[in-house]
Image (cartoon, rainbow, N blue to C red; front, top):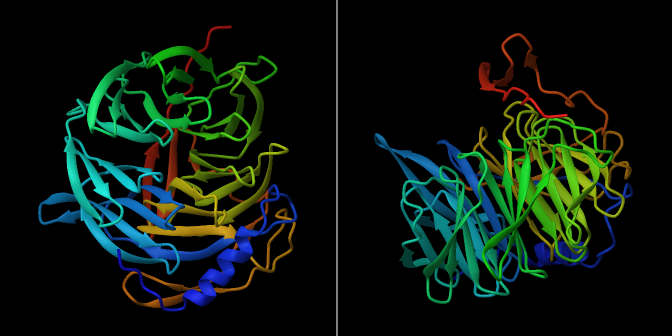
Length: 414
């Protein structure tokens, strides 16, 4: 696949500088927005994955085409932050870096895309038709793809060497509550977040069976708290699972399947991604327009990065562990933010940084300049505006109040 080469010397020099350190994240590292890539003016990007082997980012996107909706996959060269191809199909996305293969699932199709040619090479009948797939996860060591089907709370298991479905796993729990998947290739374990039940299902990849269910509604002290797990990610180097919910991130020991810590992040946690080379965790906070950065060696929040105060909506997150760069989709703004260590700033992450302004090339070819802003850890956006009487989060976008109903707390047994 042809790649643009303009300015690559500078890009490679910066990437090499960032990749040269694999030290754990700490309060001495600044994090900020280094680029913002315009995606569309439709529904906004729905998902993002990275192939670190090729330094390529893939974004699942939905746009308006006439009276209908068109699902597509945007191929972004991470070295230049430009879209180089657009592929039809798919609203949910996954990648197998070992084979340079991308998988894109729509309501009724699962497309297989060759990363070398950016062409759809197969359509898989995965049995998820009409079941509303919500997440994909690939185990590169076993070449197995897992498709989470929300309506049936099941997972389709697909052998990617033959592109055939081999099993269906009944996750159980409340139908419609399955929200996210993660794979630990080191242990051949799959984790499924069940939002409505406040649990995470632990699945043995060798037998395709649910081994146990982790209750994340209790903190390490055993106190019952209201948790709605929305995102899940694994650090395979430490056998640690991170589960994002509305106000916190639960830290789970993968060897014992127990919650060992709870990290408060403020409000509206959504997706979570891990950089295993630095043990850094990134969590998107949807309604407040920020991304939280967590040091996995200490389980502490070390920074909040804001790139969209006027148009909140950071949702899905992916990380390139080679360049230590995070990519965050923004539903409302129709953009993809590039986040990572930045030069300059206070270096503490606990106060406003002074990171240098960055020039950003957007998809349309227009160049704009934005500040790489770092918010204080204890700041004004810890809570979303809330209409308490109606239980509705109020988000202001371009002068229009958008209302997203907040799920009421569920009663819990004592």
